[in-house]
Amino acid sequence: MKRFFLKEKKKLTTFDLTMLGVGAMVSGGIYAVLGVGMVICAHGILFAYLIGAILVVITGRSYVRLTSYLREGGGCFTFAARALNAPTFSRYIGWTILVGYVGTMAMYAYALGSYTTGLFGHQGDVLIRISISIAAVLFIMVINLFGLRSTTLYENVFVILKVAILLAAALIGIALFRGDADFISWIPELGWFSPFLAIGMVFISYEGFQLITYEYGDMKTPQKQASKSIYWTIIIGVSIYLLIPFMTTLWISPAEAGASEEYALAFAVEKFFGPLGALVIILSAIFSTSTGINATLFGTARLAVKMSTKHALPRFFGKKDRKGTPVWAVMLLTAMTIALTTFSTLEGVTAFASLAFLVIFAVVNFAACKKSKEMGISPILPLVGSVSCIGLIPILLYELYNREPYSMLAALAIFAVLIILETVLTVVANFNGKREEREASLAANHQEGDSDRKNDKS
Image (cartoon, rainbow, N blue to C red; front, side, top):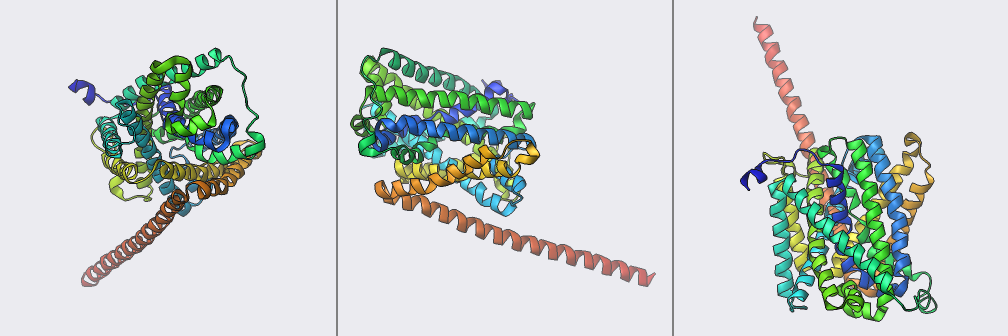
């Protein structure tokens, strides 16, 4: 056992990368926000996920092209700095990415705690939910601190298991349905625009594939592995995110989805597979959200190291142990996740994370559009992706204002704090840089003066 933890796996395979991507992409989102989305647009939720699927395919292509063109990891942070030639803007984007991932992990931890309390008959007990969420995040932190080998082994095993369960539940549910599929009764009351209101809330479900770009330094052949693993992640993720909502809308009504909240998927499976089916879904939700935390923490810690090397974060974020594990980044991100999952609401962390990734995906697609000529691609698709993501931001804010005004204010407040924090850090860094430049200049002048005096004496 000791040898297992000390003998580090040096490079990630394409399979490892795909499992990390799927682990982050197919995670708490499908459990936590499916019911919320159905309340907003009823059976139109399938169209909401379809819109998200189109955007994620466009954005995934932009990630692949830009990573291949720049030959560097770091995702949107690197794209903003190099493709857009905006290093200062990239630091603001970097902070948005980091805290967006912290919000995502907090959402996963919240959903994990909620499902676990429900499993043991303590649904609604806030203290137990918080305790389980914290314990889960700390457990994942320990796995990450053991290094690359333990992290990828944990991810590979549980991602395969959860994908198998979700695909089986979707396909069996669709095959057993014998009623009339009703997909248009919601239109007169809610209107065709309602799926666009829902996509803002469920958009968080589609993040995760971009974490692969942060593992660039751990790949043996980055150019091939990055593109293959991103595309495979999106194929698997989109397949699940279209099949699961389709199956769910066949078996439960929007009212039932709203009443069951994050248990909407389990409630749907219970309709055709009984209590045992619901139990399997609850168990899959528990280890699904844990793999989401694991993959996100793993990738975000590497991004933090990348940002520290570019002076966008304090230097201690980049410190690693003998096995190359970014210890400080892992522990600090864990602490931030615990704070957010303890003191925020599910709607609050979901809203902020969705807003953050709409901004990030808009920037990535804009960068791909700007560099389209150099990369030999048409600018039309990335432009459509960028404009669409930007257009969804006011729609999400509007929906939050009507449904969860405090969550909207909390999300905007976090963005404001990030802008202020990065501005302060930039001012301090510039001041320190100028001070170091002055000190170096003074030292050079002193050395020159000493040399002149020695020459005079001689």
